[in-house]
Image: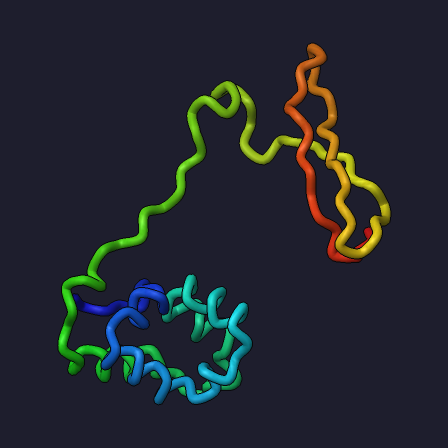
Length: 140
């Protein structure tokens, strides 16, 4: 597999030699909390550079990383692309504008308490079923 700036870190991590390159290029990677490492794996090389550009301090970080990854023996098992999730066509009619939903949520909720998000009724009285969420203690 040829790695590019669009390759997700999780795909690179599937190859042990490629993982070693990333750990060498991002030394603090393994000291990250597990939940951050999990999130990090969903990012592409270019996103990692964009988020950490100031810290990495090299304008050619991606090119150097890709050059090192090109020297790594490829494992065809890691070549499977991650399918992008697509919304169901049955979710709502096609004439509903994208990102048009309005939501009413409580101003405050007990930390880790369960609360219900009630959708705002659309013209014609139509509404979606409510969604149950878990508060993380944020207020708006």
